[in-house]
Length: 144
Image 1 (cartoon, rainbow, N blue to C red):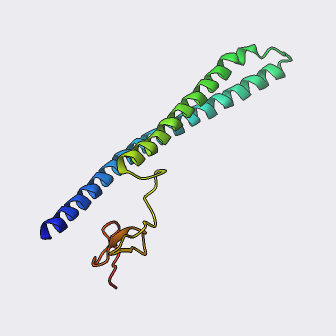
Image 2 (image 1 turned 90 degrees about the horizontal axis):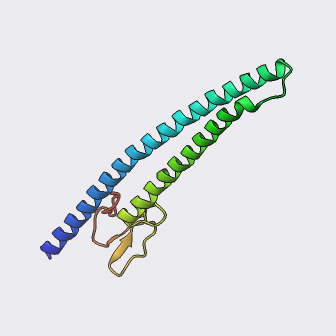
Image 3 (image 1 turned 30 degrees about the horizontal axis):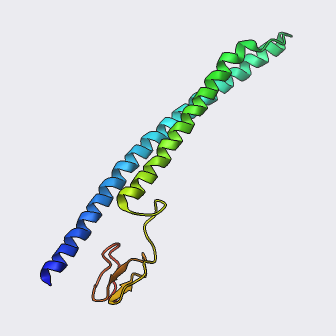
């Protein structure tokens, strides 16, 4: 019986360490992606400003030939496509984490259905042994 308790504790501890490791790594990846997206958005804003200034100059000169802006339009479109790809990578991180951690939709399981001899943690909804003093998932005091 003591061996089973130790194995459960060890397994729970290992899951916790894995979850922390995965979430930390993912957070770093997400921050890098968001920073890259922000820098691309800044580039787009600068290019759009240049387009506006150039367009005004063309209009002010009485010309109707805006073909010189074509290259900048293409550049903006390419940057927007790059942002879309980065956003897909960002979303893929959540999906990957969900698979690694065994959670649905990237969220922690909530309101687990307790089996006989178990109780549900009032804080996080995890099923815990009825004799447990603390929730194995969030640490909530179950006896108080």
